[in-house]
Length: 508
Image 1 (cartoon, rainbow, N blue to C red):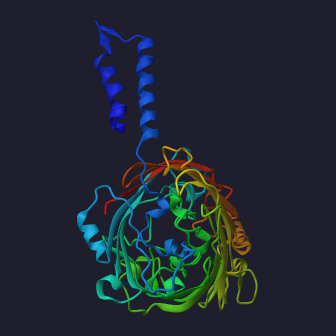
Image 2: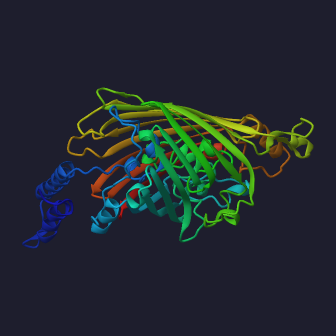
Image 3: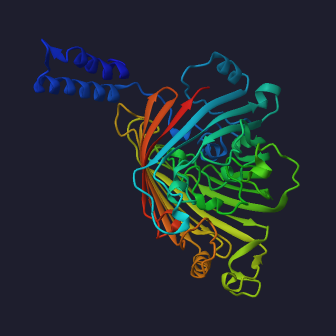
């Protein structure tokens, strides 16, 4: 079988070389034969390419969401040991990496790039906020380095490992070009501080009794531990990847690439059941450059409160081990006071009285997240998987009162392409009633509205369809389509459609 690019190029080159025969163009029938040969070679090469085990939800190293989503083996022992680190395929195998890994050092380097371009024009009109809207495209991405150290292999410390991730981000996102500030068209945009190296997390983790009890502490991203799934980033849009956006509705829940000091403990009373909780300081300005440009600011002077999440999950495996599922529910409480989104100090609409907003002494968030493989095909990780869930936030303090989502991932439906994945996802976001009423009052009197709104925010939906192609070892390329219904949750903004792609390259 010809390599992919040779299969594409040979018929085309042949056609070019023979385009003129005796000074005449090829006949229509001859051109059809050449075109048919080209398509045949393309399809033959595509469906006969060698299979490799790289898929998007396995390209995140030894991230917390990956480890959480792995129940104990049926014959698991109680021996204290470090769980195995991720070993993704790479473009070019590196003997040094293999040598280090054998000694407990796992070093990964990768790049994720995301492109999105609008194929629909933005809203036009006399509203001053529309002046800068335009139809355009954007590119955003990140390079990441991960260092996992198994101190059991390196120094004999049973069950202890450390994890560190740094990133650099670049580019911008297309959604703001048509007025949306709620959901990024490219998830890798933002949060990286616009620096060469930004620390995401650095923490130690002790695994005891064969994984039945785990304790971790250090600089941690709370939403990488809780309300997380390795399946979310099979998609590109920020309403879904790297977590449904409603869970970080406030600036008080640290999600990748932001982190705070934190402590987390997880226990497994049964093989397929876990319960975990933790305590994470709330740091003022966690997503803002003035505090966390590099991620290396450790003094804690900006701690203004604490959040205490709790989560439990059932992780059954049906179908003789081929149909895994994850069913989790959780909640978190924020101790930091937050402003009411509608009332003033005297329980009147602050948009009308122009008095100071009422302060709520605490707030909360809850979630239910579920996924289940419904069908199994040929390869071990192939099949049709459904994801669905809901996030419900404190309606008095939140912008997003609730977010509901659903998705399908269809992997390996073609026997010769076991790691290609077709995906479809949607998120529906409902804006809190207090926010909508406040914006209506402000708009009626011609005042500036919050949240970059140019109209009353009520609800929005974002959809994405994609096809992830395993090109070669270490490379995944994903063409995709995104569609925004009521961008920025505003019904005065025209729906937006985007075409784009996501690429992932594993270098080490």
